[in-house]
Length: 78
Ligand SMILES: [Zn+2]
Image 1 (cartoon, helix red, strand yellow):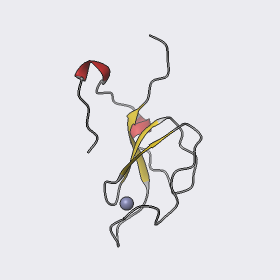
Image 2 (tube, rainbow, N blue to C red):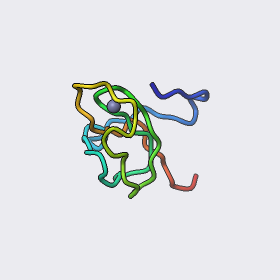
Image 3 (cartoon, protein in one colour):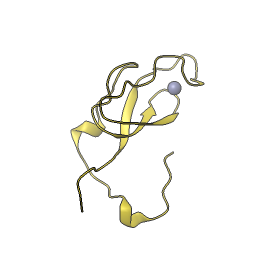
Image 4 (tube, rainbow, N blue to C red):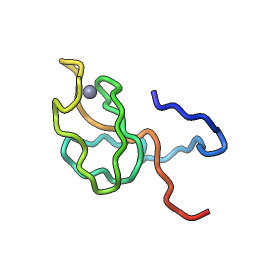
């Protein structure tokens, strides 16, 4: 579970991009935090960076190893 301290810096948002699943070793479409759907392991990835290959984290056997963006990093200037 991703954690944060200050709620002023994070906002709940609904967008289809959060529903997409991404296979191992495919480019992250956005910078942010990604979660393995099968085991909950979380990583940070920059846009265009390859998501980890299979078996690169202590994955729970028998579950699907695909990545879902759970936090989007907003690069716009404020
Ligand atoms: Zn996993």
